[in-house]
Every structure is written in structure tokens, then in C-alpha cells.
Amino acid sequence: MAKSVFINVFLAVSVVAGTLVCATSLQARPQHAIAMNGDPALDPGFDHLPYANPDAPKGGTIRLGESGSFDSLNPWILTGRAAAGIDTYVTETLMARSRDEPFTLYGLLAETVETDPERSWVEFTLRPQARFSDGAPVTVDDVIWSYETLGTQGHPRYRNAWAKVASITQTGPRRVRLTFNSPDRELALIMGMRPILEKAQWEGKDFATTTHMVPIGSGPYVVGGVDQGKSIRFERDQDWWGQDINFNAGLWNFDTIQLEYFSDANVIFEAFKAGAIDIWREMSGARWDNNYTFAAVSSGEVVQDEIPHKRPSGMDGLVFNTRRAIFSDWRVREALTQVFNYEFINQTLNDGSEPRAQSYFDNSVLGMRKGPATGKVRALLAPFAASLPPGTMDGNPLPVTDGRALNRRGARAALGLLNEAGWHVADDGILRNDAGQPFRFEILLRQGGGYSFGPYNPQPVVSIFLQALARIGVFPEVTVIDDAQYVQRTRSYNFDMTWYLIALSLSPGNEQPLYWGAQGVETQGTRNMMGAHNPAIDAMIEAMLAATDQEDYIAAVRALDRVLTSERYVIPAWYSRVSRLAHKSSLAFPDTLPVYGDWPGFLPDVWWSEPVQ
Image 1: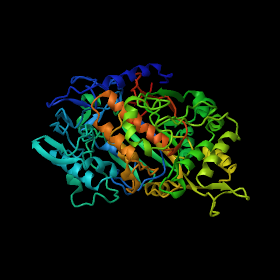
Image 2: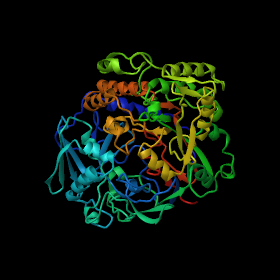
Image 3: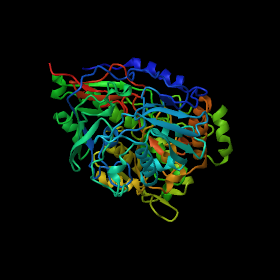
């Protein structure tokens, strides 16, 4: 069921403006949903999510490809590499997110949510029919145990918010209340999104240890089979308690979801061409336009669809690890950014089709605006102005080249900055400091790419970059390692430079300290790959979390975006305004698309398999 580009999805972006209003009307009474700002878009009696098809047929199998391997079935801890899909298909949360709104949660395991106007506490009431796959009821005791365990033994992404919880208590047979110890309006939502595990299954076991034990959840699927490190199969729970909940209407239509693991992204694509998996995300517009001439496309067995979106660009590119002395100076980072010839790279690899990410929240209302900071953004940054990198207050646009390979202007600018930082091209043509030490660093790459939402493989980008660096006397070492080693090294920040990819939502909040907060400088497993440590960043995040109206919130995010961009932590590559999905023609999805487009919550959640005629 092929579809053309869905222009009408852009109309849905009005939801962003409509939900970021001055104040929430939510009072201290039970509600069916909760929004970060404003009111939920759907009334209590809604039939289904607007981007789901309640009449979608059930049945069939979808086969998806994953890169690398796995050695654990516990995705909630820092150690090990967990199989994908468990926390999506097997377990559930108290509330579930609509991908057609910036940040709104509707009841899933919980039938209602209640909070005070200040959101100093939140209370959930469990649905009486909620059950785990083994038939045991989901209880308040399970909820409290899950929250306490994840908050103290789980991955750092859970511990950050848990530190803001003063207490968690049972307030009724099916009611649980969390009280917070610091002002943070997002916590009431964040606490609705923790996976609920069955306490009885984990009694007497070490939760924080990598395990092959199949978790018991309350979700639509159970683990049907595991070939350790190679594949995992999820089968529909025929007795799933939640199949008649309005939020789930039109979701989870496949009987089986099969995840196959391959050594790298190149092999996944070849497997797709051979018919071993059913869908492929193409990251290159040039390849999309020119390389899909294989037999399955020609016969109509495979179709190509473009899914537009209005989410922030995120950041995709080469990240500097500023924990390393060689990259601690912003002038060095700016110099290498000047050398990176984006226009030539984009033309060579993408036929010039992809826009460059100008900032972390580009492509959205949250992104920093060109030129000097003004109004509330400038006021937020003013207390830190003296210590901020050049360009923060007045603007620091990315360099634009003439598209020629040599990029002489960029090389001259880079050498000037490097000279200021104490690096000079010696008589042997190598960039050295005053002690004669060469400017050397390592670029760490994952074998075959394997970046789900980034370039198909960043190695061609790096190859062109290396040629440009050589012209200024810089000769990095490129190390390509397998998936397991890559995860271990990046998780412990044991690299100089690597490929970085971070996706951002229309409602950034409590996850931001894990992305670039000061705690990530030392704490392993965060997304603060660059080692960001700037008081202005933490202050902007605090302002974002404390904002109660649209104008203040957007100003705080734009100010954060401005600081991150001016710090030159990443040499930005490109992003795409559409997702390009090649898939079996027997697979279908609804005509109405969420504002987030192809994003978690879309594939395979709302897809289905057309019955064989």
C-alpha cells in the first residue's frame, strides 16, 4: 500500500502551538490524561489515537533488522547490551505518550492521573483489569517496587528523576502517590512513563546484573524465542488485558515481531534486498533517488514511502570529547569545524539534497534564532555572558564554503585559530605545539555504521574530512571496532572523537541533564558524550523545567540551544525533513501521520499486514 509524501502532516504542527499555552487547566482531580502544557487534545471518551487505524487487520509477521548483537534481556540497567524491543513490546507504563502532541500522556495501566496545580505531587489509580502476562494482577506494590528499584539500581536515566522524589506511598487499594522534593513541573509526567515490572519475578535476584531471564510484563507481546545475540521473537499475548483500551485501538496489529541482528548496517541493507527483513530506513537522499533499482522494487514487491515530520533536527555529526586536553579549547573545536567542508561533503554523498543542522533544535519553534540573542533569551543568558564562548550572545553561524574540495578559506581560518591556541605547522608539514608534540587524536567509529537514525555509514564523511585535515598538517588515527567494543568505549567516554547522534523532542525536559548536564562529565552511561560542563547549560535546563507558560519555556530552550551550539561540541552534519522507508508492499500504515512522523510509537506500532488476496 504505497503512499506519496504526506504534505498534510504539516498541518498537525499547529498542535505544538496549541498545547504550549500559558497555564494548564488541570486541577487536583482525577483526569484521563495529562499534558506538559495546556490541555490534552483528546477527550476522555476518545475512540483511538488520530494516527492509528482502529479497523486495521490483525495478524502476520514483521521482520526488522538490528545492528550489532546483544548479551542481556534486561534493558533497564547500565551493564550489558540488551536486546531491543523488550521495554516497548513486553512491558508497559502507567501512562502512554501520544506522538501527535508535543508531550501528552494518556492512561494505560493507570485509568486516571491526579496532581495539584503546582505539580508538587502526582497520584495514579491503576485499572482494575490490568494484568501481567502470567495472569497476576498489576498492583500498587509492583509499581512501588519498580520505581524504587529503577531509581536506585537502574540505568542513570532513571536515577536523575528519582532523586527528586521525596516519597512514594500507597493511598488506596489501586492508588499510588509520588511527592516531589523540588519544583519541576515535568516530573508528574515523567513518573507516568516508568516500566512496571512484576516484583515477584525478581525476588531473590540481582536486578543490576546482566541476565538472560525473560522478563514478565503486561504488554501486548511476550518473548517467544531468543537466539542469543542473533535474534529475538515477540509473539502477541492472546490474553492481553489491554487490547480493549481506547489508547490501544489500532495498535499492535502483528501477531509476531521478529528482530534479526546483523554485523552492521551494510549487511542489514543487503538482507533487506534479499527479502530477509521487511523494511529499511534509507538515510541518504541521493541513494534513495538513484539506487533503488533492484528487482524487488521493479516488481512492486518493495515500495518507497517518505514520511514528513515537524520534530527538532537533533544533532548528528562528529563530537569532540572535551574531557581530552586536546579538545578543551573552543578555538581548536572551531578550527576543525572550519575545516569540515559540509557543502562539498553534502554534494558528494547526497547530491546536495540534505539541509545542515544549524543547531540542536533546528527545524522547530524551539530552535535558536539567527543573529544576536534578544528579549527573554538574552535576559536568561546575561548573567553568564562573561564566561560564554564567543558568538553565544551575538550569533555564531556555521561556516559556509563554496563547495570546492580545497576549501582554502576554511583552512586559513582554521590555522589562524590553531595558532592562537598554540599549534603551528612545523617544517615537516605536521601541526605541532611549542613542545614539538604533534596534533594527534583518534576518531572512533562503529563497524559498518549501525546508526538507526543517522547516516547510513559515517565512514565516507570521515574519509573526506581526513583529506581536509591533512591539508593543515593534522593526521588523526581512525579506529573501527565492533558494536560491543564501541558501546563499552563510548559508554565510559574512552574516545577522542566519534560519530554522535541525538534525537530531540518537541518537549525537552528532565532528560536534558543526562544529555549535557554537569553530572555526565564523570557519570558513565549518560548521553553527555562531549563532556559538557557549563553552568549556563544547567541554568537554562532549570529555567526550562520551571517555566509555566509558552513564552518562558521556548525562551529557555532557545537559550540552551544557543549555548550548546556556541560551545562547538559537535561538527554538525545533516538532518532530513522526511524519513525514507522502503518496505514490503504488503505492509501498510494509516494515512494520518503524527506530528513526530517516523518516530518511536509509529513503526511497527500502527502498521499492519494487508491480508493476502
